[in-house]
Length: 350
Image 1 (cartoon, rainbow, N blue to C red):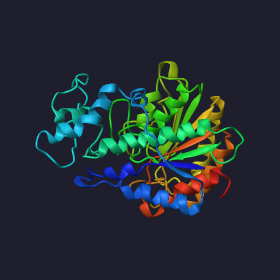
Image 2 (image 1 turned 120 degrees about the horizontal axis):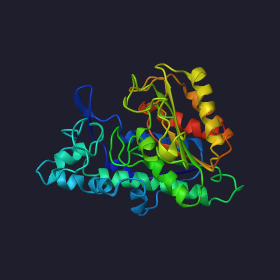
Image 3 (image 1 turned 30 degrees about the vertical axis):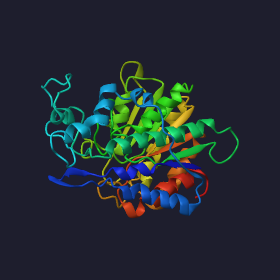
Image 4 (image 1 turned 90 degrees about the horizontal axis):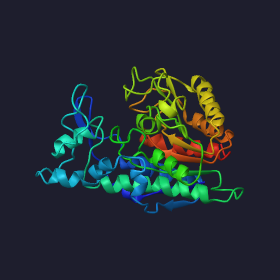
């Protein structure tokens, strides 16, 4: 299996507001470095760097003014004399007008954010742009690989950092800025796929991906995640959120209780995969979060490292060309093992 990455991810690491304290973000460069080291040590397959992609691939998914904001936010922030990470000060909550973009950077930061977990620093734009390039490069490699040629023909791995599944059409949050999985899924549609599915196995609901495809029938979104009654992002991910308009019935949420283990997880995974096959899916994008691991510091499932091998096997059994896009996982010592176990299981090497 081909792995695509970018060293530009090192340009981004900031602070977050968590537990009432501003502290270094759990989403650190060590995460991707650890996964890449495990990819190489395991002999998973070739490793390549991302190829720069056209900006239009971003605005095909995200609102153009939001992309403009991400690109210029650091310059606007430092123009006020501040050199530390930019975080929101105020959010447009219920009852406040939410359509007009403020002129001042402090207002813009809240206008385009769902939380204070997506800091913007000097290298953030370069890192998030490169992360999207990683997803698109890996997607193109998968689609361009002739069927039946072995490695690379069935699966590819986009080692994206920062992650993306909390980034919606016009807001950032949860360490996410550009929605790498959604950008790749949209590229697949542009390249001729009539039915695409995104399977999100991160512990946290992919609210951003849901937002982007909620009114579309060509991209099915299915997510297994911690019940939002108790788990971030709290305000999305309930089972009753099934799509709207043309997308009604094409959004499938599977909220699971605190402490879910593999025995409880697997029948729900099988149901999600059944929905994906029934969709007539031609290409599958997997938002691969391994924060379902039992030791993850900010999540609450109890999957073990060997369970990720089985996860990959079950995804492979769907028989679909599959792009894996790296999302969460914050037990840095284990993230490489668990992510690569999923890929090895998919390859039948578990």
